[in-house]
Amino acid sequence: MNTKLYVGNLSFNTTDNDLKTAFAAFGGVNSAELIMDKMSGRSRGFAFVTMETKEAADAAIAGMNGKTLDGRDLTVNEARPREDRPAGGGDGGDRGQRREFQRR
Image 1 (spheres, rainbow, N blue to C red):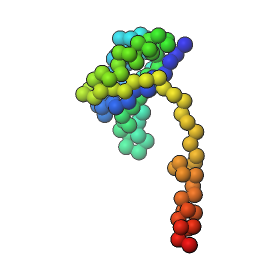
Image 2 (tube, rainbow, N blue to C red):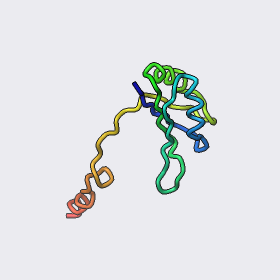
Image 3 (tube, rainbow, N blue to C red):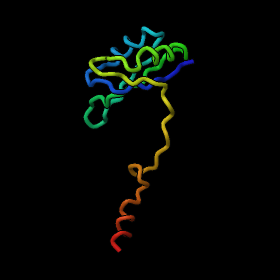
């Protein structure tokens, strides 16, 4: 079963291939995807690496968490599902209403 890992604190110079190569030492890598900023096209400093097995993922966490890649100490853990967030930038869109009540 595939296991997705979160990889944080990446250098802006790190590539998908760099990640695949580094994580392949621990088992089969299905994919490595850097997360890019939509506006600038630049890396956001984190990625998701999908390992072929849970055992490979556990070995990669143990072997890569805190290790240096491209001059940065990595944070590696099992990825968690994204939490639901309210629309409107996370404040529910009522920020203006709160200000209105505060003025009265």
